[in-house]
Image (cartoon, rainbow, N blue to C red; front, side):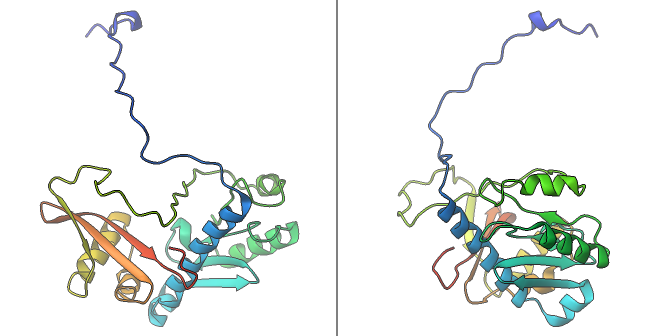
Length: 225
């Protein structure tokens, strides 16, 4: 087959411009801290719910020291299970604390611990400290947030042929099994402990009666979700 020269290719038709449904904003430090704390509170409650025999079998643990929170798991190589959740967020990080955390993961046999950072973490040299110790930037997550403004009456996205339902005791195993199959995890005993747990709300999206997506929400004592 004769490849076409670049000049012979037809230009793609640009998509019709439309207003984004989600805005991208620079947020102040205090709001950033509140968002990260809401996330940390969810992880703390998640680990409190873990059945003791499951946690022991998987080497699963979460630790706190002041406002700092980090997770450890010796059997499941999943990012969230071996990471420092809020280093330099609510109080400035120090090199001595960084070295102690790295030593903790080395002693546990964890070869790839993770540290979350964001534009507000302190001090500004934190990224340099991490890189000097051999850590490398590996992707990232967007923080999507909204206030309590009521949702619009019309859905933002097409809803034909799909339905959303809340997870119930009757559907909890289907929900947990979907998550484990998608992420190749053995966490169903842990997930089932969250079904019906106070503060937690789980949902499944079905397409043609098959589960196509799931999401969970945790509402903390401070009202942050």
